[in-house]
Image (cartoon, one colour):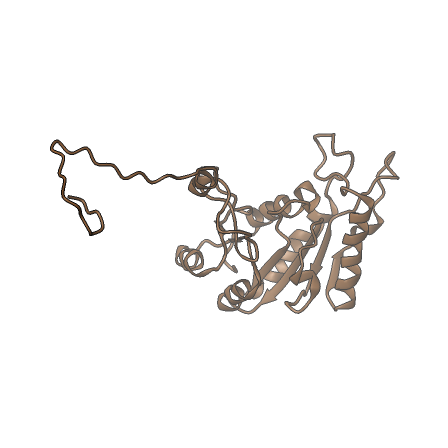
Length: 241
């Protein structure tokens, strides 16, 4: 939102988008920039993406390690070409990254797209890599509509200092896990984990009460221990007598 604390939002987005090289189910892959915050957001994001520490994933000081396989690296790079052909602006291109003493590794630098639109494949499909897309919209209503129209509904977050907007978002967004000023809205294990729409397979979520029900075989037992045995036959359904 235009009133978001931009420094805190950028810090949050960087870790959420590029942690684990974007290869995790809850990675942020799309930012919807509302109103006039888009330009200042890009100005702060782009140098941070350029300065990501990328190298051997076993070194704690690194922000990102390599892609999981060569095939997946090629797949993510192909999405970059698709985005360019569809008209998105590639602000940060990580394809030329070379890591000293690891030249044969499957490394891809952080990538940032601007002016992404909902009809583009890089918006519609999960890239599952270090690629962040920025979509510009004019107002909050347009942003909320975009999210609710999408076929997936796993996780979403809003960054704002307006409690009224945050409350409206939480109540009206059609997504299973929602964060307010929290980049990755993964709840604690005693709450259910899982999305809505095509982000959920089957009737139950993970963890929480649904997790207990999934591993539980329930049995219903009806018993009566009367003090006096009655010998008459009853032709009605049993009641709480």
